[in-house]
Length: 298
Ligand code: ASP
Image 1 (cartoon, helix red, strand yellow):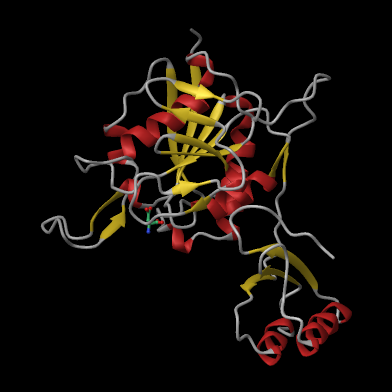
Image 2 (cartoon, helix red, strand yellow; image 1 turned 180 degrees about the horizontal axis):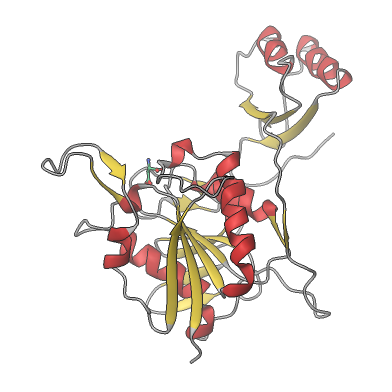
């Protein structure tokens, strides 16, 4: 088998956390530096040579490991930049990330990184890597195996993925479904792209295809507009409540999470509020609250 080179970007999360007070194992967990992560996984791992780095900001200064609740658009751009700069030097990429907002990050990276020809695999864990019962070692190893596909004869999956527990999921189709189960993630509206069991099995029919004529040039977006918000409809919502949300001055776009296949109350007051917002130049995207299926406009 060939050797593979993988860049691991450690952003924080439970996977790299240790008790805040080293003398008290029950004190709150805080993400720590990358050192413990290098101690528990061999390097090379079955022919996969991996290099671990942290996030750096716009001035190239190191960013301390974060609880993923604090991760947002600027961090997504920093991750994107790191991958973009190192793109030619590695066969694949692994992002170690807290589980809480991992699915937001995987969705964002899937759109920020265009025409990928290499895997970008995001993972984390429910328990820190130093714990005896940890899921970190299996998750990290699975992610490295997919990113370093060259070394173990797996197909290249040229997209942004989440590797977690026994499944490889499409990054922009995934959501966190459990705070504590090993299977913390699911992709309810699209089948898994792969399975981790005794063997790693990739479903080649489902993975993003690179055109036969060759890949289009890889590029990375370097800007995001944060003047966006999401909000769910709920029974009992008053037109005036939604009017104040839709008139926020520094919000241009709304992701409105509607009922079922895109339904909303028939109340004319409610519909008038939406129509006024659109007239005022707001963009409203209709998505469903359901985990499966899609909106049918009209
Ligand atoms: N609060 C942690 C985080 O998202 C949870 C985890 O990693 O599982 O950073």
